[in-house]
Image (cartoon, rainbow, N blue to C red; front, side, top):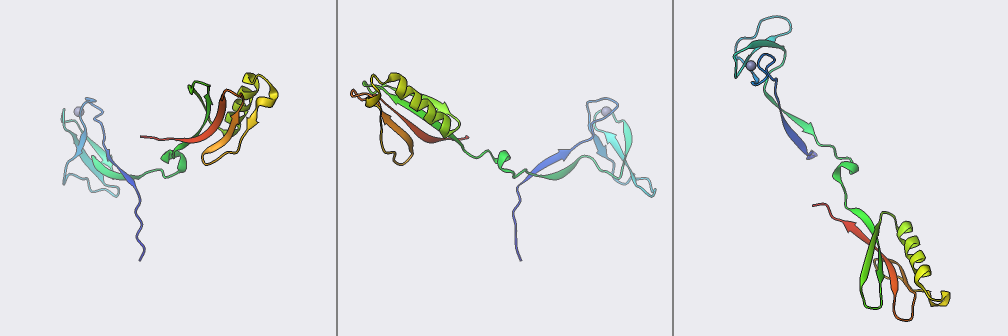
Amino acid sequence: MNEKRIPVKVVKVVWPCEACGKGEMEYVKGNSHLTITPFREHKCNVCGHTDDARNKIYPRIEYERVDESPAFQKPPKKLYLSIFTDRYNDVYVRVFDTPEKAISYAKKLAKDYAMRPEDIQETMCCGRWLYNCVFSPEGYSVRVEESELVNE
Ligand SMILES: [Zn+2]
C-alpha cells in the first residue's frame, strides 16, 4: 500500500450574520427541517438572528490543497553578478537576471575601461565564474558569477 503525504491548508468556513454583520451564524443542533434537502437552522452568536443554510453547516473546518506548482514554491532565484574590481581591490557589483546580460555588461565595461584593446585578457573561468577578464596591467578586472537569491 502506498502512502502519500499532501500538504494542506486548514481553513475555517464561516457564515457572517447578514442581520448584524458582526456575528457568525452557528448551527443549532437538532433543528433541521425534515425536507428533501435539509435546511439547517443557524443562529447568530451576537444578535440571535436565525436563518437556514441549505445542506450546510457553519462554522466548519475544511482542508484546502496547497498549490505545489514550481511558481508557488518560489525556488531560489538565480542571479548573475558582474563584479568589477579596481586596482585598489574596491569592488563594484551589478546584478542581472540572465548570464547573457551580465556577461555582455562585463565585456562592455572591459572595453570602455581598457586603455588599449590588447590589455583585455579574457581568462579561463573556474567554478562559479562564468566570465573573467583582466583589462589593465594594474589589475582592473571584471568577472561574472552565478549566485542564488535565498528566500527566507
Ligand atoms: Zn447577527
